[in-house]
Image (cartoon, rainbow, N blue to C red; front, side, top):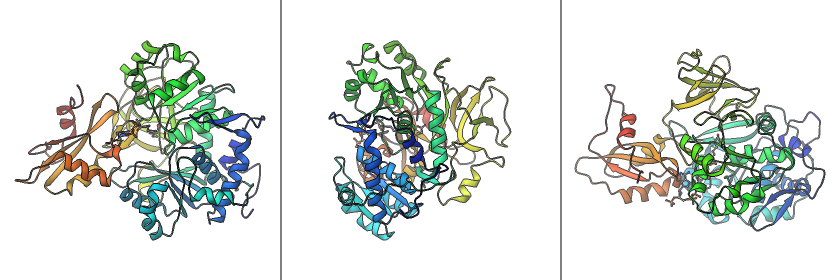
Length: 512
Ligand code: MLC
């Protein structure tokens, strides 16, 4: 196979994953809700066929493959085949609209763009404009990608990759409204997963319930890599659905989720203490787990949810302990091999218990933002720490508590939203003078988006029309759930909008 070779020194993550496949080829890997199973023994041959197709379509090591596809066994096999070829997997949230996608296509300049069959027609032009080849993959494995796989010559090698070669780019929203692609190397991903399987005590007879989306680090890297490095099966649900989760709970031992999963489960009458009999670990991350959710879940099930902390730029960073005390409102300790410090604005560590910005260094920390060297440089300190933008405290024994955000960011149902992007979209709507988008407490999503809009003199804002217009441009999770019209926005002496005043004022918006 061209440019592909096998070597013990190969840092290709696929090589590591394959080395951990169970000896029994019939060992189940993915189990679908329909009861179908994909086995570990089939992964290598299948990804060789996918890799053959991708290579025949022109994908080479270092090329980007952009994917906006539904969660399915085929989409996971596509990820593995892309790794195997040494190309860079760039997954995108399926909620992104065509206008959002146009940005990602232009920024990532992929060789191949894999889209869902029903959205492909509208994306042809954007793909063509940057010279990307557009193929389709549907949730049942249908589409032109599979047509290519069926006739492909298998490529059974594994591309030689070095430790710093990029395996995946994960787009994160940006404070300026422009999404940044966090470049994660093969070693970033491998080191993190190897740490986690020990830290969280994964054993051969574990079974993972996988209900997360696979376009973010939580579902794609943390969950999938942990399972595959221990060779355990995953119940692979297309999305979170409380009834489906409840149906599968008695046959699993570990579940990973965002806090919304846990609050929704508790709101479902069928979710009982007995249903959790086989579970050894519930893990939560991607958004703050409220102390009241932690306590209520313990009272409901006898389980103390293990809260951990991570971000796209560094995968998993800190975790409450498996065996020690899990304390609500804290994210535990730095992962082995990861150094954390809490610093002031001059990057000097503050005293234990004091608030500052959390900084991190370790094998998990990304290689920078795709094609943004200046942005990358500005987010690292001279001694190589990544400045997270999260405000934190650290106890004398190293236990970390996230207490706020330096950046103007909202986390809704485990998804990051930067208000600037939404404000930019609102401000160009007819009749709008200016706007401020905030996140306020929301029982289901943790934080819900509210847009506070100041109209031009004499103009009247129609909330429904604002929402309808925003939906044509922005993914649904970014569209405010409530629009409030005001005469003026509160400002400080410098003229800056006081979002803290707005957050306080509208804190009860979603309380019933
Ligand atoms: C969907 N909607 C949301 C939303 N998700 N609104 C706000 N916030 C969200 N997160 C909207 C849709 O636009 C739609 O609006 C309506 O809700 C129903 O859509 P749905 O697709 O049926 O939603 P649902 O299935 O209920 O999804 C909610 C959810 C999901 C919380 C289960 O968003 C989810 O799985 N979140 C997990 C995200 C995640 O994996 N994050 C990890 C990031 S990695 P309308 O108006 O059209 O009806 C990371 C690092 C780390 O942060 O540490 O892990």
